[in-house]
Image (cartoon, rainbow, N blue to C red; front, side, top):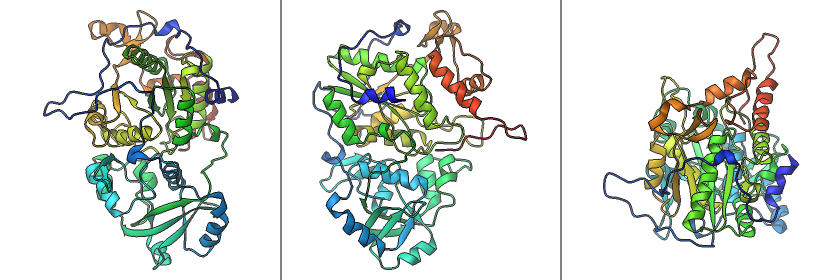
Length: 465
């Protein structure tokens, strides 16, 4: 995948024409928010500017210990009570330490936790409000609480007991799991993936405090070079002279419908007067549920999409977003949008049922498909972000390619669901020509082919990241 690294170092040049595949009908106007039935919320008027959007709180938070103080901090940590982090806990340390959750400076104390649960926002000392819709918390059990005792600091270590960080000025408070689950997901039904993975068996206490992180988090999986921090992304956008950054979050392989949405967005931004809008293609890299395609395979597939010219490498930055996935629909999509502000994005593309999933018990979607984009247009603390809702793309049988759905000729369109796509790939069957670039599809087929049946003839489940 070395070729994809050039996305971060190549000097921008005039963008070549997009592939003819994408010369289709688009919506004539760019809508920046969803109209409300009641009194409309005033959003900041769109302005063309060469400066990147400011991080939440006005300053990007980075929580790494200075090189000259690392020895001192390691000696200090040796005498502190130790808390062992799970893999998801470590991903949250990664998120906080690089500033994705700015202005948050550590795991949430109780006041921040309650504001997040009940207001989806945090009020700062100056009275301003920033969005924060998912709790970023660290759970401990009764034994760990007793071990901490009266200490005001704890050392955080990974599964191999390597020192990761010091958590200081700590506050320990009750972990009300049912309240947390109900407020975050809107249901307490059993079978919610993140709940099963990170909450159900977690401790009955939460510990908050300020983080001092010894070293940047690395995973040594061959993909660290794609994990650009908000500061590094801002530097890259500035180097490319971006006057607009539009972010596209995904946790699935890119098909030509996705590409259509992204290239059409850039076209519309150019029509609005922007000179060099840059796409942040930002796959989620933290915890995902077991039936999602693993990150390493998704990155291979994204590489082929760029190599095949489906997206333009000169105007695209591919980077990994380190956050774990909640599958919490309209609540979580606010977090996804807020984090991209901190990375420098002033436009956010949102589609059908963002961050959604099927109901864990009933045969229906857990969330209304349109609520995510409607909530983003009203969410407290996201007024500075321009929301780009897109029309539905589907396979147009009359043209043999992905196009925006036209209800007046609905019989011409074929909707290929994620389930259908996975079934085709598992069976080594090809989708209709024009659905996905051939080399990208081959990666998907190779992934399912790699899940070789065990001796009992059953295909093993993928392991969540």
